[in-house]
Image (cartoon, rainbow, N blue to C red; front, side, top):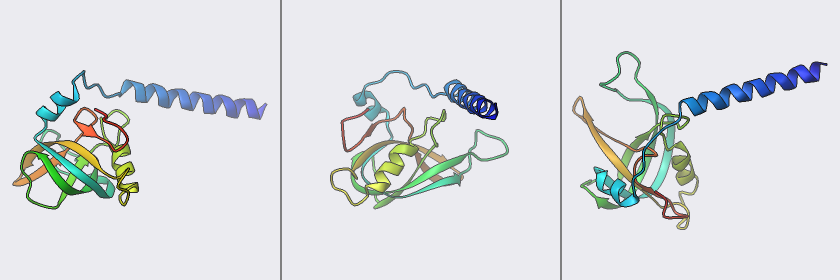
Length: 152
């Protein structure tokens, strides 16, 4: 009898999580990779050296708590669009699960950092300036090209 209750509890929990993630799903609309590339402020090609989860940055649109994001320290091999003079760039994204974040891509790129076959990524970035600082961000709605395919 207890095993049925435990199974029912697990099934109910899974259904609640699935319905919550579906309700908060990200919607981007349809754009070609060429259009997404054109819309980006900066497009860089390189390797993800480090990923930090739970970073807070100021958000002028929200009052109160700053959103918790993921920051990737990206080593720039080549600038494909726009201007960037440095060799390392902090790139911000969400965690996924409805916030349109690229956490999976960031982690995959960092895991394969030393691989010439799987470690090279291209990211289209949006530029935001706030309080005298420049922030670059990307989401699943922006241009990206991974090592295994010509995705998005």
